[in-house]
Image 1 (spheres, helix red, strand yellow):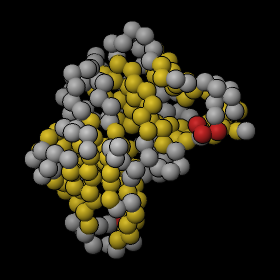
Image 2: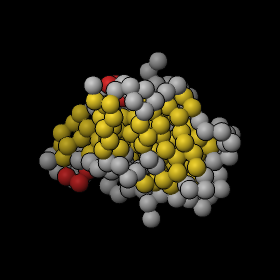
Image 3: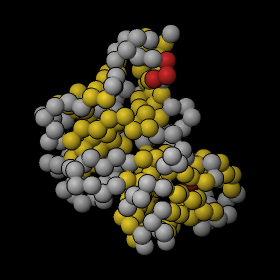
Image 4: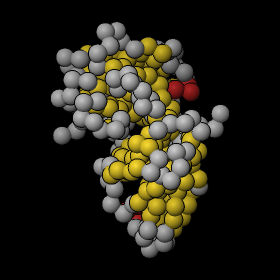
Length: 117
Length: 116
């Protein structure tokens, strides 16, 4: 079974508008971390935001926020006030703690976001 | 700040040739990883290391070997390249902090490998 599911292969958003990128996850581990990475066309992977399974509040980093709904096992990324430079592939990833998996990340298949002028 | 540096950035191999990809990090991280990224898929873990002199298999280890002789370097080897190994390879490194799940992995810029 897929551990990380990103159901939106591509998304379009108008510049200055907000956009939500979906991510659902599957784990039986009570302790886990959720990450979002951005991959622009240049290819590098850029860390954006992190949410721990025991964190009480949703994580925020500048224009990025993570809408964490634990019961639904979803960790959607919200980008506010989109900019042209936000056009990129976005990956959701998870690390399960209790399984002793040496902190390796499991990635979703990604969402290609295009910001329109 | 260099962070995680991968060499080379691009490489074309013929089937059966061998090569080594080098990953170097200057952040004193204990953990290092090699991933591959194929079209339409997220990154998949090939091998990883939890410290100098240790390595372990990830999700897709077949056809690859690794070595971690120095803490700052993690080498990925292809002994006999196959077209199925055409991919983009990413190296990453991380601390091993006590925070639950909060181990951010920092990535290199990637190596684009084509095997003909």
